[in-house]
Image 1 (cartoon, rainbow, N blue to C red):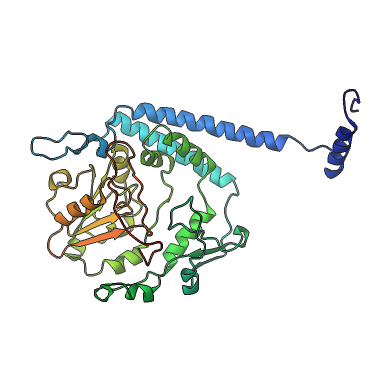
Image 2 (cartoon, helix red, strand yellow):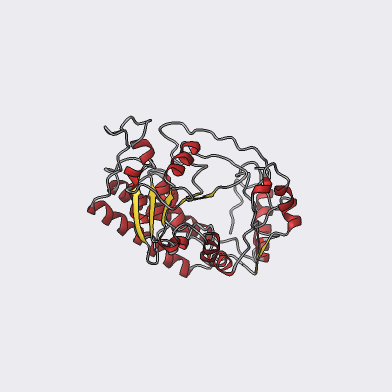
Length: 382
């Protein structure tokens, strides 16, 4: 019985309506408590992982763009920036243990949960949808960002922007010397999209990632939080093979990939080269890159912000890759100049950049980012 003392008549009417709405019983608080308890346990777990990672990596140098270069004033007698030291055995073992633990917990959580997203159709945007800039998001996002879902997510229809307006591009000044070849949606790419939707990142991985970003360099956070989890995708192996046909020196060519991240973007093309050199700014990222599957190509991973022969251990490369890096580096103009100097006559420079252009400093500390002016409000204009 509910005591009447101190209660208004409206309180009883509310209670009676609540009881009727729930079939004669008030709503249970247990579902809410379970959710809040699970969130609390995830946060505690994430903070424990973060504390362990912070202790293991506390003696490592900062990102290379802070530790070396003109801004830091630490060039050697030859005017070159020194390569950062590799991680010691203790730090490597700790990083491996924590990353495997996070991967194991995340994998178990994914098996026990049913958080997959429906995916019935994956298709390319039509020319009409491209001209209409369909799916464009608001000002809080990158100008190139768009919503790939067509209609409600429950419908499971994914629309990807693969094409472009060839007519507009052909009308640009100097377009006669250029060849524009759109890349289509192939089976490997569709399989990757469907796989990501079928098994999205577990909540425990995301909690660890958010906690790590508060204490570590944010790209190092991804090394720990997303070990053995596919996060980045640019082109399928078949697309790369088509794009790189006719490259200098063919299968014996030497490739350089600047800012290779976790290796997921260079892994699909590595088999097409005799050797691949990859660079990153921190020792944990280089540690992760050394595990990149290359399917036969020799791999060298270097922690450096300087693209010089001394830092890279080679005078020239047949093909240089700058994939989703140019808009995030400290000085995009200087980076292109350094890459050009590393290429022989007839060498190839492969650049992937998000358009419309919007720069974001990958290492927000240290020297300021040099701004590069790229005009245009959409892909074709930029």
